[in-house]
Structure formats: C-alpha cells, structure tokens
Length: 159
Image (cartoon, rainbow, N blue to C red; front, side, top):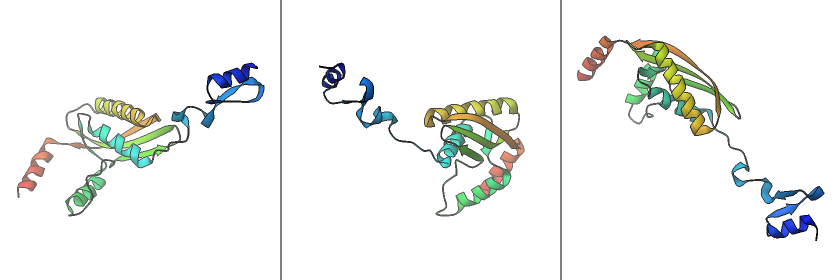
C-alpha cells in the first residue's frame, strides 16, 4: 500500500488525496473559515455609539442640530426609538474600520481624558464584537454641557 492510501484509510474518508501525496480536507478547510462574513456600517455605528455613551464625561452624541431633530423624533408618537448611532460615522472595509465621532462633554471634565477613554472603549468594543481592526477613531467635541443648562431643561419638563 502507498503512504497516501494508508492515510486515506486512517481518516475514514474524511480526507481526499491530491497531487504529489498531499492530503486536503473535504469542504475547503475548517468549518469556521468557510464563507465570508460582512458587517454593515450601521452595525459598527451602533456598537461605537453605545461604547462612547458608556464613558463618564460624555453627555450626548452628535451636533446640536442632530440632537434637536432626534429629540423631536423621540417625542413623535410612533416615532423611532433613540438613535444610538447619532454622532457616529464609520467606513467599514473587509478587515478594517475607521470611525468619526461627534460628542458633547460635561463641563469640568478633561476633554483630553474623555477623548482618550472614548477612543479606548470604542476600539475595544468594535474589535471584540466584529473582529475588525479599528485603524482610527477621530473625535470632534462639538459642545460642552453647562450646569445651568441642566436646570433650564428640568424647568421646561415641569411646565
């Protein structure tokens, strides 16, 4: 018997012989790597939006205009739920992603520290959940939430 034939018998038909005595598995390799997985931009936007909001010092996401339209949309009966991807833009390739975030920080916090923490949290979450390599996370701080603004919002809610 030849070496290839013996090897075929030992694997009980799981393997097929190929040229020059090489053996390959049926189906083209391990089951976990057969096929292709694509991840939509919106999926990465939601993951990044949730991860950014989890950081202390982040008051909101998005520019003033997008937050205003979002607040109106949230109050309309039958409107969509709060958009977790507000203030997040992504470009997703086959193995890499780049993200742009627009945040509003709480007055008194270190913007540099908040930006660093947001960047770390977003990269960790996106890479862990998607397997994509995050090549950059650009952060634009579009506003700061002042303490007086919170009192004004509470008064408007009471009326």
